Amino acid sequence: MDWFVAPEYWLSRLIFQRALAAVYLFAFLTAALQFRALIGERGILPVPRHLARMPFKHAPSVFHLHYSDRFFAAWSWAGCAVSVALLAGLDSELPLWAGMVLWLVPWAMYLSIVNVGQTWYSFGWESLLLEVGFLAVFLGTDEVAPPVVVLFLLRWILFRVEFGAGLIKIRGDACWRKLTCLDYHHETQPMPGPLSWFFHHLPRPLHRAEVAANHVTQLVVPLLLFTPQPIATVAASVMIVTQLWLVLSGNFAWLNWITIVLALSAVRFPTTAHPVAGPPLWYEIVVLAIAAGLVALSYHPVRNMISRGQVMNRSFDPLHLVNTYGAFGSVSRIRYEVVIEGTADDLPREDSDWREYEFKGKPGDPRRWPRQFAPYHLRLDWLMWFAALSPAYAGSWFGGLVERLLENDHDTLRLLHRSPFPPDAPPRFVRARLFRYRYTTWQELRKTGACWERTYVREFMPPTRLAVPVAQSR
Image (cartoon, rainbow, N blue to C red; front, side):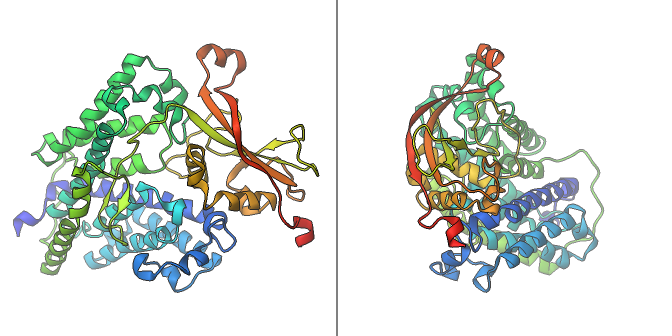
């Protein structure tokens, strides 16, 4: 079937596959380096406890068969190794069926992780990576030209990502309709980057232009993805530029990068078609069957997207094959941060020697400038942003975090930038306080060197200690 393949997209496929392998690598690396403190056997939300109440059919995962921290670590590092192999192009050296199996491996491995990750893995980019990763299995290798239906389905995902995000904005917070959301967003976003302070201080008319351009990019440009070339390439290029702007202005894990990867699949690069043999019949049958299944599963996200009660970032099946996306349907006007402090004093008083824990990415010390971490994902820092919005977001895990800080737990402290206590001298008490943060002005920055100014709001958690001190429990 000549219509089945699009040989002119061979370079687009190559770039897409290598870029997707790089995103996989960051995802597995994040899991390998952070899991012990978050979901390990002694973690804040242990996997074994989660599996005891979660049936396999609701969350398929290899860890239903066996879990240990050593096994999870091996699984995550193996995922890194497979990602590196794909990044190096090993799939192109294999027969078609073997290359497809190789692409299936990281998808299945990461699915196993996401389905036991609980609230730490509740972000939309987890499902997006799995949905895109599953389609990548059927995109083929150098042995065959890229299938048209798979390229179309990749654009369909990109359309839902952008158009869904645009709809939830225009339906949600009035500041998106008034073009004023960026007066606040750069300051109140989950994890600012090193340039976010400067983005916030751009002239307000430019902020209005940014919002207007965002609406065009998310509500108009996605429709052009399904038009003939070169219009589709122009549309995808506009999305890439927009996503790079977001990369510069904040830390959104690999959300922006995988959106760029998707857009690359829609770009037709100026090159001659790569000569390949016709696709085998079994491959055509498999691809068309999978495509039909995914189109059928798209009913739920489409229904959600056109609904007035549209929800963000939800998966409609345990395999995360077809999902709904969206972000910032509402924008905070004020930034709050939970500041955690500990003291070695026997009695916790207001004038005790309270020492602050510093996180890697979330704002803390007003003089400490934000760093760039994306596409690496600081899961604890992101959840701390939600905790500041409402204590309800932290109900399942904040107590466990405090307990491990009181124990000076090594794995938990590795997630932080700095602990104020030596390894052999844990704090006696830990407390949490809520502060309002705002960016300093140009004048304040020159005078104090601080990019943030903070004001105490209220107590978030009173001074707390272990029921049995660490020294006695040992």
